[in-house]
Image (tube, rainbow, N blue to C red; front, side):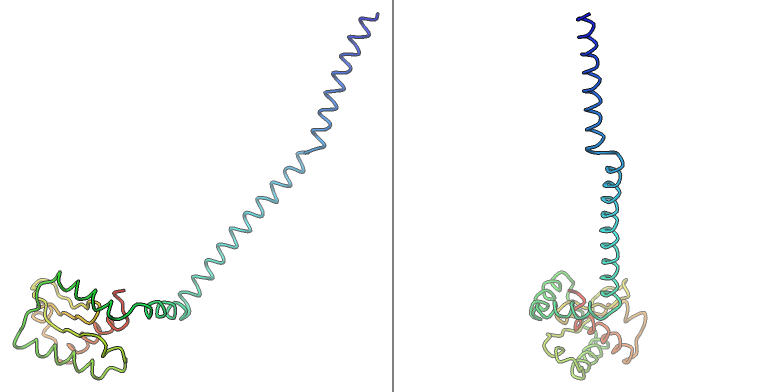
Length: 185
Protein backbone atom coordinates (compact mmCIF):
# COMPACT_ATOMS: atom_id res chain seq x y z
CA UNK A 1 0.00 0.00 0.00
CA UNK A 2 2.79 2.20 0.73
CA UNK A 3 4.02 1.92 -2.88
CA UNK A 4 0.59 2.78 -4.23
CA UNK A 5 0.35 5.75 -2.00
CA UNK A 6 3.72 7.00 -3.15
CA UNK A 7 2.96 6.66 -6.84
CA UNK A 8 -0.38 8.33 -6.36
CA UNK A 9 1.25 11.10 -4.40
CA UNK A 10 3.88 11.51 -7.09
CA UNK A 11 1.23 11.66 -9.83
CA UNK A 12 -0.74 14.14 -7.80
CA UNK A 13 2.40 16.22 -7.17
CA UNK A 14 3.18 16.30 -10.87
CA UNK A 15 -0.38 17.35 -11.68
CA UNK A 16 -0.25 20.08 -9.05
CA UNK A 17 3.11 21.32 -10.23
CA UNK A 18 1.77 21.42 -13.76
CA UNK A 19 -1.30 23.33 -12.67
CA UNK A 20 0.78 25.68 -10.62
CA UNK A 21 3.13 26.33 -13.56
CA UNK A 22 0.18 26.83 -15.88
CA UNK A 23 -1.48 29.19 -13.40
CA UNK A 24 1.59 31.36 -13.04
CA UNK A 25 2.09 31.51 -16.80
CA UNK A 26 -1.51 32.48 -17.40
CA UNK A 27 -1.54 35.14 -14.72
CA UNK A 28 1.88 36.61 -15.41
CA UNK A 29 1.18 37.42 -19.09
CA UNK A 30 -2.39 36.68 -20.07
CA UNK A 31 -3.19 36.72 -23.82
CA UNK A 32 -5.66 39.58 -23.40
CA UNK A 33 -3.04 41.84 -21.87
CA UNK A 34 -0.53 40.93 -24.60
CA UNK A 35 -3.09 41.73 -27.28
CA UNK A 36 -3.82 45.07 -25.62
CA UNK A 37 -0.09 45.93 -25.49
CA UNK A 38 0.31 44.98 -29.18
CA UNK A 39 -2.69 47.16 -30.09
CA UNK A 40 -1.23 50.10 -28.16
CA UNK A 41 2.15 49.62 -29.85
CA UNK A 42 0.57 49.44 -33.32
CA UNK A 43 -1.57 52.47 -32.53
CA UNK A 44 1.54 54.45 -31.51
CA UNK A 45 3.31 53.51 -34.75
CA UNK A 46 0.30 54.54 -36.83
CA UNK A 47 0.12 57.87 -34.98
CA UNK A 48 3.82 58.49 -35.64
CA UNK A 49 3.42 57.70 -39.33
CA UNK A 50 0.37 59.97 -39.65
CA UNK A 51 2.24 62.75 -37.83
CA UNK A 52 5.17 62.42 -40.27
CA UNK A 53 2.84 62.32 -43.27
CA UNK A 54 0.89 65.42 -42.27
CA UNK A 55 4.06 67.22 -41.22
CA UNK A 56 5.62 66.49 -44.61
CA UNK A 57 2.50 67.64 -46.45
CA UNK A 58 2.40 70.82 -44.38
CA UNK A 59 6.09 71.47 -45.06
CA UNK A 60 5.63 70.93 -48.80
CA UNK A 61 2.59 73.19 -48.78
CA UNK A 62 4.51 75.97 -47.05
CA UNK A 63 7.48 75.49 -49.39
CA UNK A 64 5.49 75.54 -52.64
CA UNK A 65 2.48 77.72 -51.82
CA UNK A 66 4.21 80.58 -50.04
CA UNK A 67 7.21 82.74 -50.88
CA UNK A 68 9.25 80.90 -48.21
CA UNK A 69 11.12 78.89 -50.84
CA UNK A 70 11.99 82.05 -52.78
CA UNK A 71 13.45 83.68 -49.68
CA UNK A 72 15.38 80.55 -48.73
CA UNK A 73 16.85 80.09 -52.21
CA UNK A 74 17.68 83.78 -52.51
CA UNK A 75 19.45 83.69 -49.15
CA UNK A 76 21.47 80.64 -50.19
CA UNK A 77 22.43 82.22 -53.52
CA UNK A 78 23.59 85.39 -51.75
CA UNK A 79 26.21 83.24 -50.04
CA UNK A 80 27.79 82.40 -53.44
CA UNK A 81 29.65 85.37 -54.96
CA UNK A 82 28.84 86.50 -58.49
CA UNK A 83 32.49 85.98 -59.39
CA UNK A 84 31.89 82.23 -58.95
CA UNK A 85 29.14 82.47 -61.59
CA UNK A 86 31.51 84.28 -63.93
CA UNK A 87 34.21 81.65 -63.47
CA UNK A 88 31.69 78.89 -64.12
CA UNK A 89 30.43 80.66 -67.25
CA UNK A 90 33.95 81.14 -68.62
CA UNK A 91 34.75 77.50 -68.02
CA UNK A 92 31.57 76.38 -69.79
CA UNK A 93 32.24 78.78 -72.66
CA UNK A 94 35.51 76.96 -73.42
CA UNK A 95 33.45 73.87 -74.29
CA UNK A 96 31.53 75.75 -77.02
CA UNK A 97 32.64 76.84 -80.48
CA UNK A 98 33.84 80.46 -80.77
CA UNK A 99 31.12 83.02 -81.30
CA UNK A 100 30.58 84.01 -84.90
CA UNK A 101 30.48 87.59 -86.12
CA UNK A 102 27.69 88.47 -88.52
CA UNK A 103 27.63 91.96 -90.10
CA UNK A 104 23.87 92.21 -89.78
CA UNK A 105 23.00 90.32 -86.56
CA UNK A 106 26.01 90.81 -84.25
CA UNK A 107 25.61 94.61 -83.85
CA UNK A 108 21.86 94.21 -83.22
CA UNK A 109 22.40 91.54 -80.57
CA UNK A 110 25.13 93.54 -78.83
CA UNK A 111 23.12 96.77 -78.98
CA UNK A 112 19.95 95.17 -77.58
CA UNK A 113 21.92 93.47 -74.83
CA UNK A 114 23.77 96.56 -73.68
CA UNK A 115 20.62 98.70 -73.77
CA UNK A 116 18.94 96.17 -71.50
CA UNK A 117 21.90 96.16 -69.09
CA UNK A 118 21.90 99.97 -68.90
CA UNK A 119 18.14 100.23 -68.37
CA UNK A 120 17.93 97.37 -65.86
CA UNK A 121 16.62 98.20 -62.40
CA UNK A 122 18.55 95.28 -60.96
CA UNK A 123 21.69 96.70 -59.38
CA UNK A 124 23.49 93.38 -59.93
CA UNK A 125 23.12 93.70 -63.72
CA UNK A 126 26.19 95.93 -63.86
CA UNK A 127 28.31 93.48 -61.85
CA UNK A 128 28.32 90.81 -64.55
CA UNK A 129 30.73 90.60 -67.48
CA UNK A 130 28.12 90.45 -70.24
CA UNK A 131 29.08 88.78 -73.49
CA UNK A 132 26.43 88.71 -76.24
CA UNK A 133 27.02 86.75 -79.42
CA UNK A 134 26.00 84.28 -82.09
CA UNK A 135 26.70 80.56 -81.76
CA UNK A 136 27.42 79.00 -85.16
CA UNK A 137 24.81 76.23 -85.17
CA UNK A 138 22.71 75.88 -88.30
CA UNK A 139 20.43 73.12 -86.94
CA UNK A 140 19.34 74.17 -83.44
CA UNK A 141 16.83 77.00 -83.05
CA UNK A 142 17.67 78.24 -79.57
CA UNK A 143 19.20 80.91 -77.35
CA UNK A 144 20.80 80.29 -73.98
CA UNK A 145 22.61 81.93 -71.10
CA UNK A 146 25.62 80.66 -69.22
CA UNK A 147 26.34 81.72 -65.64
CA UNK A 148 28.12 85.03 -65.30
CA UNK A 149 26.51 86.82 -68.27
CA UNK A 150 27.40 84.85 -71.41
CA UNK A 151 24.42 84.91 -73.78
CA UNK A 152 24.35 83.16 -77.15
CA UNK A 153 21.75 83.07 -79.92
CA UNK A 154 22.13 80.30 -82.47
CA UNK A 155 22.54 81.20 -86.12
CA UNK A 156 19.65 78.83 -86.94
CA UNK A 157 17.28 80.92 -84.81
CA UNK A 158 18.32 84.14 -86.53
CA UNK A 159 18.12 82.65 -90.06
CA UNK A 160 14.77 80.89 -89.63
CA UNK A 161 12.87 83.35 -87.45
CA UNK A 162 14.35 86.65 -88.63
CA UNK A 163 13.39 88.40 -85.36
CA UNK A 164 12.65 92.10 -85.26
CA UNK A 165 14.70 94.33 -82.93
CA UNK A 166 11.92 94.17 -80.31
CA UNK A 167 11.72 90.38 -80.52
CA UNK A 168 15.49 90.15 -80.26
CA UNK A 169 15.45 92.43 -77.19
CA UNK A 170 12.74 90.25 -75.61
CA UNK A 171 14.77 87.12 -76.33
CA UNK A 172 17.97 88.56 -74.86
CA UNK A 173 16.05 90.03 -71.90
CA UNK A 174 14.64 86.59 -71.18
CA UNK A 175 18.14 85.09 -71.17
CA UNK A 176 19.42 87.94 -69.00
CA UNK A 177 16.67 87.09 -66.51
CA UNK A 178 18.12 83.58 -66.21
CA UNK A 179 21.54 85.06 -65.45
CA UNK A 180 20.30 87.65 -62.95
CA UNK A 181 18.12 85.13 -61.09
CA UNK A 182 21.00 82.67 -61.20
CA UNK A 183 18.93 79.84 -62.66
CA UNK A 184 22.04 77.97 -63.71
CA UNK A 185 22.94 77.46 -60.05
